[in-house]
Length: 337
Ligand SMILES: Nc1ncnc2c1ncn2[C@@H]1O[C@H](COP(=O)(O)OP(=O)(O)O)[C@@H](O)[C@H]1O
Ligand SMILES: [Mg+2]
Image 1 (cartoon, rainbow, N blue to C red):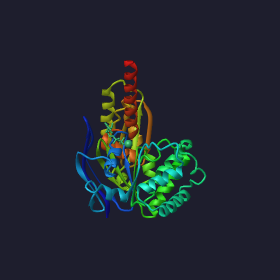
Image 2: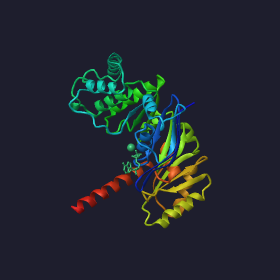
Image 3: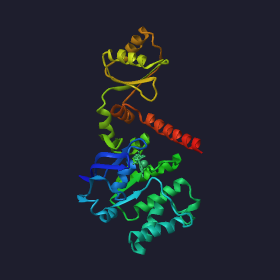
């Protein structure tokens, strides 16, 4: 049974087509992970689902009712933990949670009971009565989480819940999300961290360029890919012809398939091998054509391979692209001054 059905969402910000027909179904009781690089459309999707942003077209059904037509009803059923929150610095954590409880129209008794429960659960007692201004990133995230959970929603939506956190805070948030799922809450989180999605999710959708490009359990996604993944680096390609030549050589070997020349890092190739002892054949074949192998690594398919297979890029490549575009923009700004 699905708690949420998102259908054909389209959303543009001026010339930017952030969502281009995104469709997604979230089973009730799942810990559902949206994986995608920065700019893929995760935040836009989650904000639309939480009725904080209107799509250009498409629909969202929440437990059978139209969430976009009944935003108040939808908000009662869900808690949203945003990617970046500006929390008040003067108030204490407890005061902030009380304020939040009042927004949800909890009675003051209900509210205070629930706050005590969450303080216990999220281990916040040591610092909850200190001003938020003095909180670390991990503490703030826990306050955000508690705010999202105050009204005991059926669905908790978290946008990049552990960005910028230290390892310890990260793992305590992971633990909490697993507990919530055990208790029957449906959890939907987005992340551009592969390990995070892989560690937590029982259902995954990979988003790229405003669309879902792959969907299923981690196991299903990997099995669809078949054989082992191999990454090959050859000593310095001087031009594209050479990488194409190697691609051709590989494709001629029995058991080798899906050869992709890695676009962002021009020197590496990824492909799939099925069968025994193919790596020695590859070494022989390349050696015969005087290509020196720099590195040859074989592994079981990972989620990154699922992404690579669907888009021709790795998640890491996309991060590099995004950050270099950001650097270029910054340089331009500097130059204009
Ligand atoms: N308020 C906005 N105005 C203009 N463009 C936006 C805005 N919000 C997001 N975008 C653009 O829409 C695309 C999707 O963004 P977003 O949903 O934030 O992706 P993600 O959360 O996966 O990083 C990106 O290209 C982003 O730059
Ligand atoms: Mg985002």
